[in-house]
Image 1: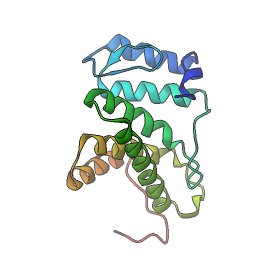
Image 2: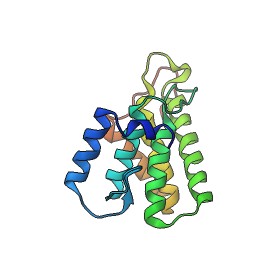
Image 3: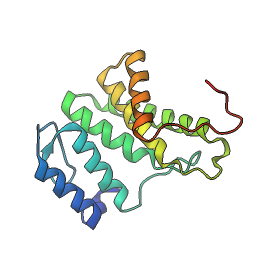
Length: 162
C-alpha cells in the first residue's frame, strides 16, 4: 500500500485507473486511495499498477521480481469481495509470494538472464485461490491457465521435464 500511494499520481497508473473507471462494471472491490468500486479483476489490476508505477515495491531476491505487488492487490480485492479476515489475507499473500518464488526458481535456476517479472502472476493466482477456497485440482487448473496467459513456461537446461 505504501508503494501504491505515490503511484496514484504517476501518468501511466492514472491512465489505467481512468480507463478502468470508464469501463465500469460490477462493484466488487475498491481502487486504493480513490474508493471507486470495480469488478474484482479490474480492481486488482489497477491497484497493482498503482503499486508498481512508483517502482518502490518489494523484490523477491530469489528472482528479483516484485511479487508482493500482485499478491497484495489480488488478495485485498478478493478479501473485500468475500469478507476474508486479515489473518486469511496475510496467509494468502505469504502463500502466493512463496509459490511464485518457487516457480521462479524452478523455471530459472540461478536467475541467469531471465526476466522474472512473468512469475509474479502466480502469486496473484495462488493468493486469490487460497482466499476463494479452491481445491488442489482447481488451483492446479488456475496455475495452468495463468502460465498460458503469460505465453507459457520455458524450461531451463537441467530442470526436470515434469
